[in-house]
Amino acid sequence: MNVRMAAEDRRELVREAATRAFAKGGYAGTSTDQVAKEAGVSQPYVVRIFGTKLELFLAVFEHACRRIEGAFAGVIDERPFDPASEEDRDRLGGAYLELLGDSDFLHVMMHGFSAGSVSEIGAVAREGMGRIFQTLRRTGWSDEQVRDFIAHGMLLNVLLSMDAYGDQGGPLGELVAACLPPPPS
View 1 (tube, rainbow, N blue to C red):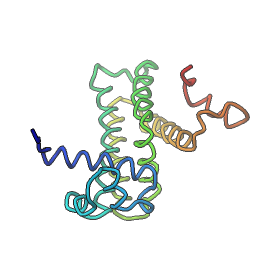
View 2 (view 1 turned 120 degrees about the horizontal axis):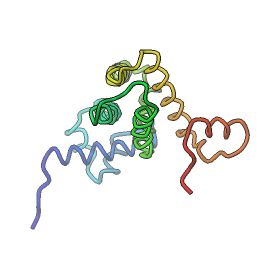
View 3 (view 1 turned 60 degrees about the vertical axis):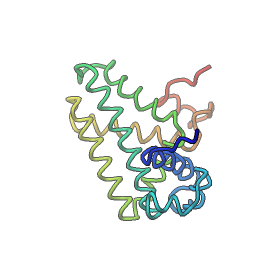
View 4 (view 1 turned 180 degrees about the vertical axis):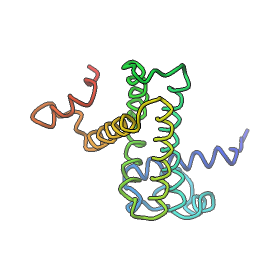
């Protein structure tokens, strides 16, 4: 029996393939043809679903920003959040580290922020970061505490994107050790 995939499922399949493709090549270095090959569909099909490469990248980047916002909201909504609690702060940090386990997600975020000079991508980056900031304010933390939490997350992004996690020696290894939990044995 030939089961047809629902339109939303096909769109999700292409978006996931685009995430993998953009993670490798970034916005400027990835074509809709590369996305199509990754998805196992034709290039005209990718364009029919998403329109332009820019619209496709925006959908991928927006989804990544929403994943962060959703992960933080999930922790905050799970039970009352105590802004003075180290355990609650660690729960938020753990939710973010779990997201960073998806290297495609991590690289799309880095590519999205670095392509912020493209006005539409910059707008999505600013809006996404604003929503994440607003979500984290629900913890009861001060704006400075939220800023520091976000800054720590951005440092993790940079360290992981440059594969510094495995660096065990020298000053970079010390920075990694100060920022990340020890790697699994």
